[in-house]
Image (cartoon, rainbow, N blue to C red; front, side, top):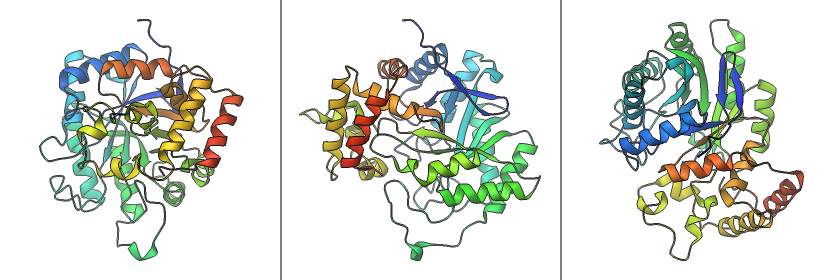
Length: 360
């Protein structure tokens, strides 16, 4: 198999990453260490130098497997004897959660202690002295997330000031434990506030990225978030480019798709996926089928159309991809070379006008 030639982009000075980033949230639950090693090796062999993880992974999250994704990466790095400066590692600290009581007793907030404790845990599991990109997995304040769209002011709660969060992250950068900082599942307000605060003091580091969902079924980024990122020079790390597999076509089969496919295997245990990426929601199936028709019209796979659409966006720094086996990963790698022409984009936009953001 001829390796794919992946282009790179500069997220920050000295941080030139591949346009594809290997997401690892299935490592340790659906994906064994042996399979994870195969994927990591294949990714590196094909030019991927960017790996994303989180302290709470794998998902669906539970006390038994929490942290295994980072552990797998750390063990692979040790066994592979990878040159650390040839690889960019990203991971995330969990925001407040009343459900994951096994992570720092909550985690209750993103104050300095929680951020530092989480960082030390990630460094230990990854077996590294530093993390290239450390991200806040979700905000420590009320925001509509994971399929919610309407902001309800009555849901606001007392949260850790952004200044304290930024100060803790900046201290870790000064200590050499983090190279750069980023956000995830954020809003325009959050991005603007973090940027404003970083500009207010030379002691604060600036965020370089935001990791939010972006795909054919979820284009909420394209409005105010896009303007915000453009003006603030913040790159989008787009996750769920295949809408949790819906855009691959496997769940549209008459039998509902393979029994070991993620949404089938973990049915009833995967709140975000079932709430956000659900074929029974209004307009989801018609939109998916319409995009399949476009792929067929242009003689390409649904995966190629979906991935090409995300990669063509000028504000997307890298696309966070995930796979459960090397066959899926190879299909994604091959699809990454797809070029979306103006004519294709016009067809895509026509479908979007009919079925706007069915999976926001």
